[in-house]
Amino acid sequence: MKVTLHVWRQPRPDQPGRFVTYTANDITDHMSFLEMLDVVNEELVAKDEEPIHFDHDCREGICGSCGMVVNGRPHGPQVEGATCQLHMRSFKDGDEIWIEPWRSKAFPVLKDLVVDRSAFDRIMAVGGFISVRTGSAPDANAIPIRKESSDWAFDAAACIGCGACVAACPNASAMLFTSAKIAHLGLLPQGQPERLERADRMVAEMDRAGFGSCTNHGACENACPKGISVDWIAMLNRDLLKAKLVGTNS
Image 1 (cartoon, one colour):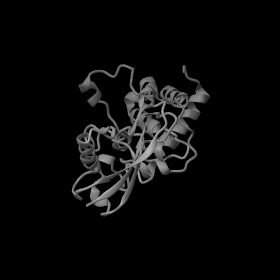
Image 2 (image 1 turned 90 degrees about the horizontal axis):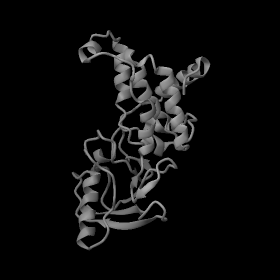
Image 3 (image 1 turned 90 degrees about the vertical axis):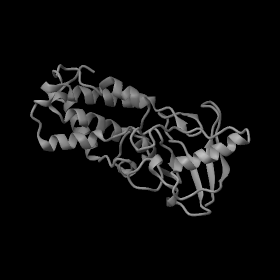
Image 4 (image 1 turned 180 degrees about the horizontal axis):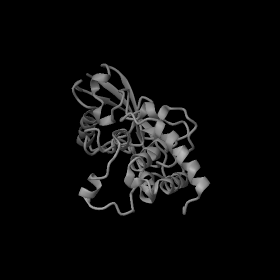
């Protein structure tokens, strides 16, 4: 199998980037997309050329670090899967593949396909935690929780923070990520005391980071590798309205 790659190469954040064309030879359909890039990089290194820089870690669809746009779609053509879970059997011999980084003011490109996603870390730092005393682990396990609430919280907690929602959104909004992180804490009894303040603080930090606003396109849900629902955005909007009505310390 042979494919042609058009890869975004950008040496530094303050320098312009461009697409560079490479040929990937002897690729099997059993390879993952990242393994294919590994093969290309080995050939580049053998020729004393700069390898393609891209983020990756677990390669099991858990860490969320492997995000890139493949043929105009965050994480590529498969449904509910990260880039590391994309396999070359999704392409045909002779295909041309365009690969570029997330595009967002809040996710500046560091090098090639690597972007700075520390804005997500800052959002989590201002509210993605429970600071009230909840007791030890046995105490927490003894708190009755409705199955419906625990199921919803688990669904929201499935977010891996990859940033595909931002890359897919025409406004580069981070509302799906932020709402999922707020929901998985706010749905549980331990997260209730700070629920409104948490929503207010995290959304304020999201705005400061430079993400756009949500206008309900729904592209974020379609691009999410974990199928996070836009229902959490609706819940977040309700919490924000309540926070403004009752007032918070943020």
